[in-house]
Amino acid sequence: MQSKGAIKFLAIVLAIVCVYQLSFTLVTKIIESNAKEATGQDPKAYQAYIDSISGEPAYNLGVKNYTFQECKEREMNLGLDLKGGMNVTLEVSVIDLIKSMANNSPDPTFNKALADAQSLQKNSQKDFVTLFGEAFEKTDPNAKLAAIFSTIDLQDRISFNSTNNDVIKIIKEESDAAISRSFNILRTRIDKFGVTQPNIQQLGSGKILVELPGVKEPERVRKLLQGTAKLEFWETWENKDVFDYLNSVNENLKNANKKDSMLSSLVGDTTSLALDSSKLTTDSTVTAAADTSKPALLDQIKSDSSTSASDTSAKSFAQFAKENPLFAVLSPAIFQNQQGQSEYQKGPVIGYSLVKDTAKVNAIFNSESIKAILPKNMKFLWGVKPPSKESKAFELIAIKTSGRDNLSPLDGGAISDARQDFGQFNGKPEISMRMNPEGAQTWRRLTAENIGKSIAIVLDESVYSFPTVQGEIAGGSSSITGNFEINEAKDLANILKAGKLPAPAKIVEEAIVGPSLGKKLSAQV
Image (cartoon, rainbow, N blue to C red; front, side, top):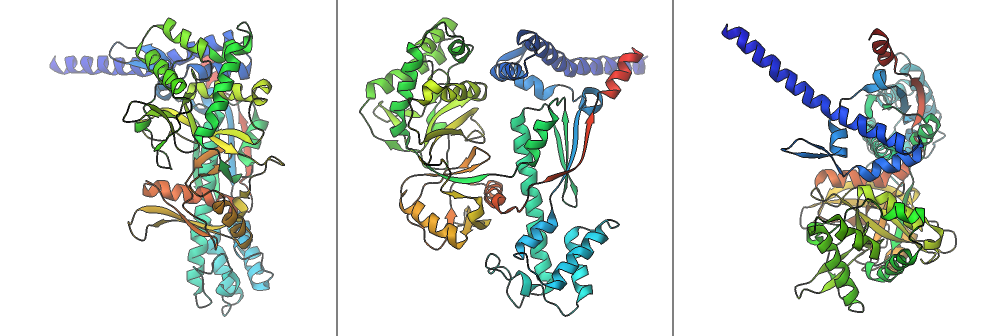
């Protein structure tokens, strides 16, 4: 009898756990169904609606209130069999990488070894670099790889006296780094694409598997996955020089027709951002940039934001949003000093937004009437992730573009090498970066003109870092320091080397998968 009671108890507990887990899926499906009905099946409107409610409470269990995003993270993973979608295998061309490292050497032994390695790879489990090394030795046992790979870019790692094994080891390191770099770039792009529960994994031999459940735009996915990584270095605006423009935008929105449907959608359904700047960490030191030209205005915004955050009344915030349409979705980068006065945060960060409000901020600044207020050489880009683990807000960085062609003064092609290193005096993780001769000249001019200011490092229109220039940098070699963890420094070094990838990952296999298992189950039911 006791054993039966224990079995019943375990069955009841298991049932409760299953219902608990499945309840998140039920909640998200109901919300998504209502969203589709409310947006008339319009994909863009649907995605905008989902983004707007991602941080809103959606499921109250009494002991905890879950947001829609938290429910999505806990829902059952349906996968391709149940949901359908797209299955893609991409391949990073290791042979192109090796050719690039050797500056496309015409050496006959080198090129025959590459061709032989390609043939051997069809029936071998070994990686391409190993097969290349073996083919090179077999083609000419007396030939030296160092004579081919001792280029300017690799001169500090490969000397003429390096053995073939030493060179193969370095090629393998570069190959692994290139594949890892492509993997991380693809993962970031997929996260931005908004696919629920994607699966991305490395398969070996330079191949990467990507499964995207529920995708209905395969052509868009192909462009997203195969696009070349775009690494750029941009000059930035100082926060204190941008605030006047933000205030003008805010006033313009405030005075606009309240019945305008676009404006209503921009300011509706938001929560305020009363952010404590002291809890936010950025690449540059957050210090006071005293500018008292508009202390009353700054104090008013800070006061209104704090009031709306502490007051749970929707009416109170609605009034604030009505008076400050921009600042309701973008909290200005201001803070209170020891005297209780509001000051501008130093650096290029002009404000902070919750993820659900970023689309609204983008819509504001993409409006033609708002663009007319801003300088032609000013644009705004989001940080790739919140500045700290505790923060849920994204930074908006002011980028200074060229008035002529809007091209960045320096791009990823100028980087010859970048790697994680340790500071000579403090032993802290940092990034060592070296540029080619042409890039070194531009870098010298860029750093000389921006001492004390930030240079933004941008990949695929997202800001990964914005270090402050300490002085003119000649020679092309420089270090990026900050409060980096080792893995953060490695990731940034990989990002900097993204511009060195000779070709993007290419799709070698693709399948559009229907919800076959889901249909079978439905038919059986």
